[in-house]
Length: 96
Image (cartoon, rainbow, N blue to C red; front, top):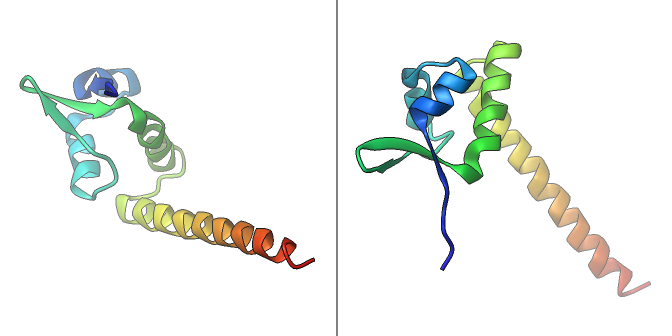
């Protein structure tokens, strides 16, 4: 059975200098997942990198949440296409 590590939202917010309401907005947009554990809201540790990437886009490039959502969607589409190209190249190499 795999154990999941969690980071309390208040610790994450304090470390990164953001408000809890901002994290709630990210959750509302579906950009991150927040889990409630023992009356504390927590961020799964495997989403830490994604949450930090979103914060950098928002703080350093001043991109709003709608823009971040669009960027993430487009990046996922590019990744899917790259995976498909890799698969097609592998299939094509069988015929060469």
